[in-house]
Image 1 (cartoon, one colour):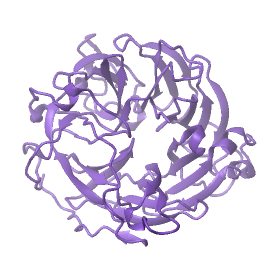
Image 2 (cartoon, rainbow, N blue to C red):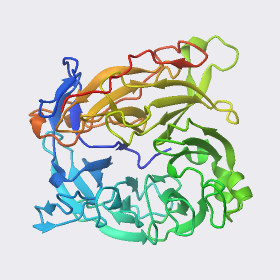
Image 3 (tube, rainbow, N blue to C red):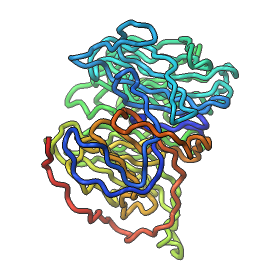
Length: 470
């Protein structure tokens, strides 16, 4: 299945890096030069001084285009000036040609909702080619984005320097981490419906013809629906679907506390009874696994049918269905419970169980985020670390990592994604001190390392200290 496009890589900040040898990073203080291990900076774009949240890198013809979602503005600069227009514009979506990663070319800024931080901007971006959508314009390239907290928008970005608005789904009180099946057109829009009791739930739309959105249903946990009473269950953060073939949708509820992993039958979700009653909301659910009250489920990424080398000669269970669950820390400087990466075995779907976790053995973790096939651990002072997922019961960090006090590097990836030679072997790298965003190609990891045990195992990495220098 194509998740957001055949050649799309989704991540959480934008930056261009290349694997290289380097010394291991030590604790830094603000103002220190960036440090890197097994990577080097390739190119940068300052994105008009707009904070980057979610980039999606998409192959269009002979070009690679980055679509970057932004938070709202800040107290100091609520509406940065767009040098291309000379006007102050609220943060929205940046469009950058990264075909030559050493010399990214800023093409266009599409303003988002007025507002600051989480209250404005246009944080989330998904891309589908019109030729992949059942009823799309074959010459179009569609960008689905949030518009602050009030709407979802679809733009035709076939000419990325001159995007055209196609449609808008508005009247909402919050939006967030959408998922779009390009092969079917089904979109799971994280929304805040005015009559629901929670800030975020799911509105499911048929966007196979982006110009004619068709709503299928509203969905959430029993107790969140209109007219319910009692305690309101934890709000949604985001879903990931395996599409018609996999017939599963994995929902992550909570961000940093009270989280749930919910496994849902896609066919029943789309074609079952639609009225949001407790029984109808339970109908498509296969299982719901609570996390600790101290942890959330920012991202729940399915990794089905993983062969386990250690179990290769076992009669049963040679392969396991794994879901990677990633928390997000909200407070800096250890101001809340430790947020980590967790691995759940969902082979027996009705009885999912946690088998391991991973925490970063460095100064205090800022947050964790995962998307498109690889885990990234976001660190205080802009640290990123890639996690080896070939052994889900004994996860470990890979050597590749980058840290910078002036940039937010990342290790992105989507299974099957490949970048052009110019991106894999760039030259004329820009100065790391001016970096603001980055992205790196990766290949799908293989099951080269066996699981160390069949039962729950925790990483033995040293516990990070909760102090650092300013």
